[in-house]
Length: 515
Image (tube, rainbow, N blue to C red; front, side, top):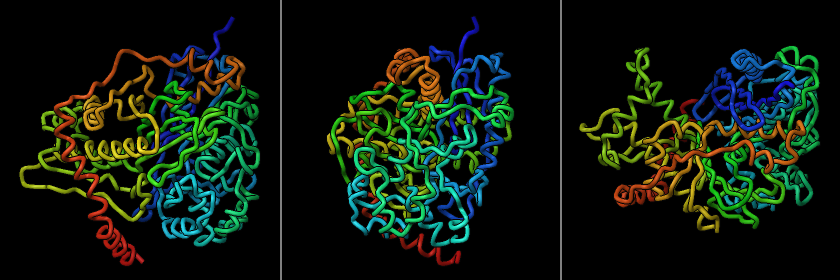
């Protein structure tokens, strides 16, 4: 009897990763293909959906070739992508323009307008400011600034919705994405139509998916066309997927309250499941049933983390990049590890693409304070790691203020490739950090959903119990470092109030000069 496998697709910010897993969570092969991000203006970020599909085809074929698995042995497909990444397309899926990537914050004026309505749907923001990253804000921007594209679009989709259509021929919505970024409420009336009407995008109601499914629901099988292009079998079950980070919560094995998930990559996100409804201006949520039915989700996040580290590497480490025998991050980490906590007086605000939590402010920017002639590249690199960790610590404290337990962290993603980065997080927040065996938890989470849709497991928790494993790797806080970091963390916490108006003005000047 042939062994059975599932595929997990992870459409991230920089690439699409495809993992092939057995039904015990063992990854047998991996395929990765990058795609390009365009930055037409400061704060803007776009990608071409056609690049996503070409990259997916390449990644699936790479994974199959590397695995030795036959296509007939694949019994299910699950997926996740970035969110809110807005695609305007025709009924056949043809994009009308490049997609507005999740980190795009051009819709700041629309976000201000939406925030001013005071509508009950804004409870997900604690009735505070709405982030311009969210679907509603970007959709309003497209209507206001590209009315021809907006009016000609038959569909307004998130990235995962577009992938789902390409795979199955169905337009479906994930409870993960729609709750998370469309203000959908499965415990009330679903899409808040009066809210859409109030902010002026009532046309979008007919263009976004109407069939909303839970994570792991079987929504159909691969179409003949998709199967041929991907090198898989027609009819292979496809699970309803969702937000990359939320699938990552499942890949971490978190299906109940009591554990804090730290999902890292281009951004940093802190998540916790809870039984109670909580709303606060410093956090996002709580989102009902967005991950596991019966539980609500609380979130606090940072827009720029891994993307800022990559920016530093790309622009200031070209000498290392040109040496094929050098692992750039290994060199940077080894150098930065020799510097004491606080980077000898440097503090960095991690606002390269604005701030998501707790300020929801698109008009602030990254800032480096404390530079002297003593400082060099490794100081700045370590200060970036510390600045990101200060921001995470602030978000953890805000979750605590809203009654969310944060005594242990379960971490995954890019940051887990650096023991220095994890140690800095643990030291600043004084919290132990657990790391799973498979650190690509979004891909694993999608594979778990595929196993449920295929019928191999009856529910998500059953699949998690069989497919997620932890080793003995736990990052323990250094109390001496923690005490030293508190002085710098306090300065970080004060900085927004001190500098946001100055940064607003600087951003305004730049916008004015670009017009």
